[in-house]
Image 1 (cartoon, rainbow, N blue to C red):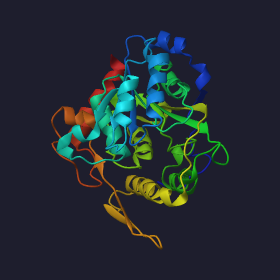
Image 2: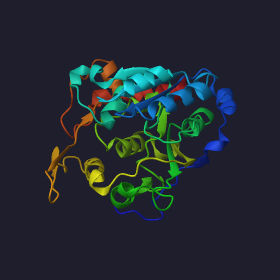
Image 3: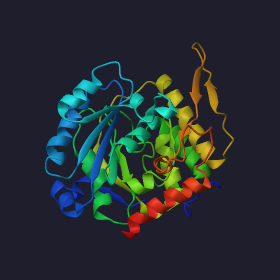
Image 4: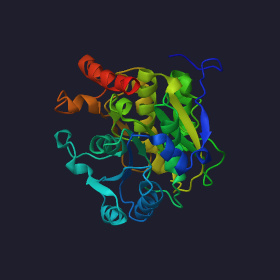
Length: 329
């Protein structure tokens, strides 16, 4: 990859959430099934209200078929609140145990893909204050109304941050590195947003980075495998969430940088990076990834792959065949 330019930068179609009321989605849905998955760790204060809203406004009318909360080793009442609100709750430690009982955002997203069953999967963060179902409707809209769309990224205005682009990790780490190595993705307004979704056949065909690099890793891997033209983005309006202090963002920024550099130049990044900061203990940031779910379901991957190991040619063949079925059935 080379440095980006205006000619090399693609622009994913941008829609608005209000183009997709529930009635429109229900009419377009047909026989497709939809799963909404919420990765959650210590989100007892917000997860119940989010599940209840999705259940009332989207599950009850039939737009959504299941709500799955994957509890990532919470020490609070996250699981109880989610279950009380009507979600199917799964503990991450109990899923795909051959890969260990590790935790992290990407690990939980990967496991949620395995335990959910919808033809379309939408992910939503579980820490959103003032949640509104537009976050789900907006992401779901292009996937149900456009058969050529296979992946959707949400973006929003963040009152806690300046401007309408990405957050600090996006603007200071992800966007510069994407500009250097993957300029075709620079038209994505918020590549690290947690609200996105896609068609199962495609999602099951790619690996998942285990940590905070999962969002940008999926974007890179899906665009490489299936092309940029099938990716859309949706304006979800305003989102309120906790604005983390800079010292909490350093490990996330490291993981994002690891992922982009590893995808650009496999083997360049060490499996473990010790984040060294003055006046505090070093923080270890590990780069690991999980194999495509499609390969697991054919019994081809009994355990975790080493860092930087892509799916084997056999695994890619299984995944490609599964993905191709969506356009031929």
